[in-house]
Length: 94
Image (cartoon, rainbow, N blue to C red; front, side, top):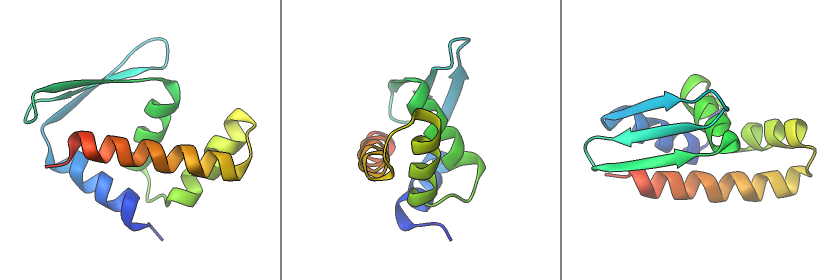
């Protein structure tokens, strides 16, 4: 089941005029046409954004994926994930 934070962010990203450009190094750039801003995402931010947009993932599932990929504790991954989701949501919020 999707938590509120991920479903809210997914709706925000879908509702905005956002174009995503994936770069060869695994990073990406989000161009928010409605908010007139450019957001640069590192590899981890790109991964999280892709997971939010492509899957019905909860915040806990995102954190587990981070922990597995990067070898950090699930607690640390959850804190980092929550911080990223809040910042991205604030940046693209309408």
